[in-house]
Every structure is written in C-alpha cells, then in structure tokens.
Image 1 (cartoon, one colour):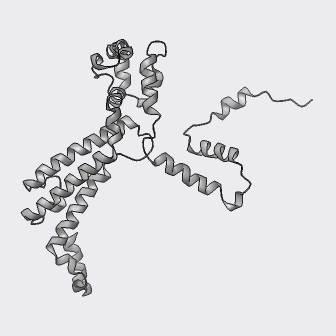
Image 2 (tube, helix red, strand yellow; image 1 turned 45 degrees about the vertical axis):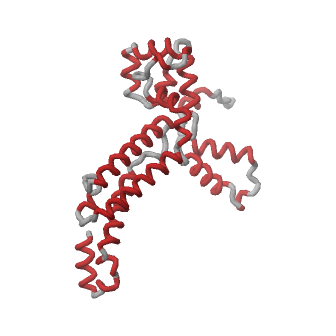
Length: 245
C-alpha cells in the first residue's frame, strides 16, 4: 500500500508533510514490525478453550520459529518477512533485527519459565499416546501402556477436545492418568477468563446495584462465565406441578 499512499498524498499536495515515508531506515523498521506482529498475532495464547498443554506447545513452536527467523535474518533471507523483503535491507539493519528476534525469544523464555518446571507433566497430558511410559512415574506406566494399545481411545484422542478425552476415560482403569490430567487442566491457561470475570464484575457491581451481596455476585459471575446450555424441557418434565381442583 506504500505506493498507493504516496500517490494519494501527492494528489492532496501533502507528500512533504510525511517525511518518514521517504526515510528508508524508518520504512525498514516499520516493515519489520508489521511482519513480526503478524507472527505474534498467530500465537494462540488467548481465547476460550485453550488449555495449558496446548499453550505450552504453542509457545515452544513460536520459540522455535524465532530461532529460525534469527538464522534467516543473519543471511538476509526474508521468506517469512514478506513486507520487509521488498525493501533494500542493509547488513547492519539485518543484524539489528536479529538482535530484536533474540531478545523476543529470551522474553518468551523468561515469561513462560514456569512451564519448564512442569514440562514432563505437560508433555504427558498433551501427548499421552507417544509419551515414553518407561520414563513416566511408576503408578502411570501400566495405565499408559493400556492407553497406548487401545485403538478406540487413540481415535477418540484425535477427535475430541483434551478435557473431553480425559473425562471419558474409565475412572477405575485410568485413575492416575485422570488425576494427572486434572492437575494440569485446571490451571488458568490464559488471562481471558480473568479479564472476562473482572469485566462482568464491574458491570454487575455498580452503584445501581449497591445492595448486591457477595453471595449473589458469585452466582451471577459463575453463570455468566460458564458455558452450559440449559435443557429446559428436561427440567420442566422433572418438576411436579400442582393441579387445580
């Protein structure tokens, strides 16, 4: 769009009001920012239904991509930076962008450092079918063997969500695997739930509802943040109505 913008500004007679558009260094920096933010926006760290094991895999994948980007940047290969690639990027600028990529990689490693403390558990829960049962805790080994040899469960693992899969496991046959999964799946996987709850609290606990008790507020927030569909027909059938005489 750069050429289009320049033509438009020339028609308006305001091209000289935007000197940055003629600054090659600024254009390179801007293009680098456009491309790297496009990659950042593809990192699935937010939203509903993203569990910690999935978040862990997404973070690891993005860190690996940053390592690849860094290597490509040194050799001035801009396959994954298409906006930057159409410009004439100097060796000095490429080295500077390489440093930014390394800094971003380090920041991701720092912010998600807690993941590596529970890396084994995360890998087990996210990839139970390929996890080496010999390296698992002893109480999990036999259950993992049964799980990995069950064709039906293998198919189910790839067709349903992670929480649904573990909830469907036979509690008597896989008690320890279910327990290990529960410990991981209850973690807050993103700030989405926190932000949603806080926003709803501000809406409901206003000066117009100053008499709202904490008990009722908890009930309102639980209903508002829970994804449950009420079966009103079944509820109505389960209630005994008093007939008029």
